[in-house]
Length: 569
Image (cartoon, rainbow, N blue to C red; front, side, top):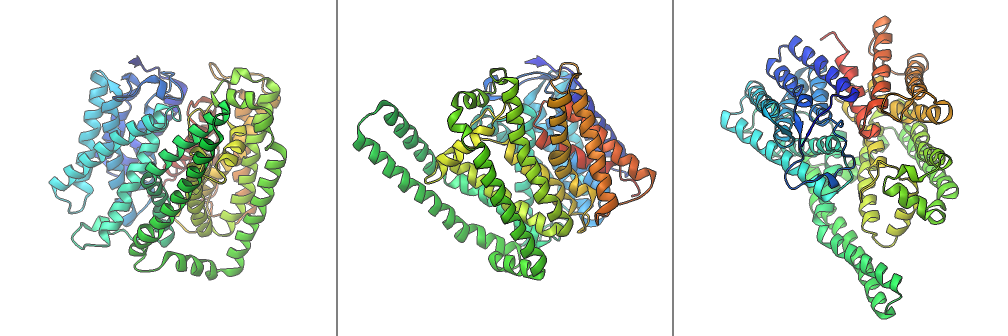
């Protein structure tokens, strides 16, 4: 147990919490406002780890990585959505805001100790129950309590599972955010599924969803289900891989090695067969239910044919760009994993001090190469066809999850090759068995696109925030910091010059979209300019101060602040 220090990251997040609470109060959502304000007690409490967890499970044990980030980020995002949407979507977002406050109360009960920690959990829970009671539109009191208890238990179990199953992959706050996404995503899928099978639910659960939002849920949750169902096979595969590696290292019996290799091949076929079986027998029928009987594969064909030249052209452009990008990456960087094994192992342990300045600059260049590829692929795609970009992000996310299964468990025939290639890109934030930075990068770019589609189908700056913040601003900050950085922020490795480059590039890229791209800026004049500068400056300081993974935190905070600064409702 440690006393939490109120650092600059906590202060920045606390500012967004206060702004969200103000907007909630302004729109007569007193219970939700109270729940957010209660979370501000978290930085003043003592921090502890959940039961059956220890410090060795965390990527970083610094107490300044305050739990407010993990407790408040998702509730603030949902608060921003609830005050910026109208009608059924506003009510649905308010319902999920209440559920996120329930989850926050459960996590505060696990991770905060002392009277202030107890007060945080208790007040947040009471506020969430009041919100559920006032916004459930017909849900009985017993139903509200049962729903709240279910979310609280799932949130606590998911947090503990994330830390124990994936050790050293998360900070405490990152694990909280990931658990929120998992629990709330499952809740949304359950609500949508049950609403298709009965007419007895309150009206708030019969939210009209567009097909690409339905496919997003089934693709991502379906791929997670494949991993869960294939766990026994993957465990056996991991055992035989480790056994084979040990035998090869000891130059043991060749017959035994051959038997293990045959088992690995058979288990790999079993994994792919299980995945295919689940897609055809479970995920496809589930998707058909949510799409009112439409076959998802036929729907995808019809979707592309709605705008055949535009969508086929974009798919072709992405295919060419990905092929060239991977080709040059393999040609330029692919041999590093074999020629610099010692350096790679140092990076895998997070030992940045083991690398020289030249090696750090080269590693940074390799990682930002993919950020540039992201900009070249995603910005034109979003500006030309936001709906195709929305769906493509969902497909790409599910493919990345599958790729990580293959890499972690060395699934034949490409598991070893994927692992050898990706380990050359590890840094201090990739210390666990799962490499999360590239997944966070995709999610960070996709999340604003997914969320913005709730409001409007046209491209807007809100949808571009993740792509520009990570693909342009973060890359510019990194390059400027390494090249010209001289003045460092107190107790941080980030430089003032890097932060200035982040803000300037963020403002410049948003200004370019306003001036030359067909983007609905959602306003004009000084108010719009002020919002652009406010979001850019806030994200610049957060990038410098945050101890979390930038790819995860910056897009969530950016789109939340953008919506919170959009007045007029």
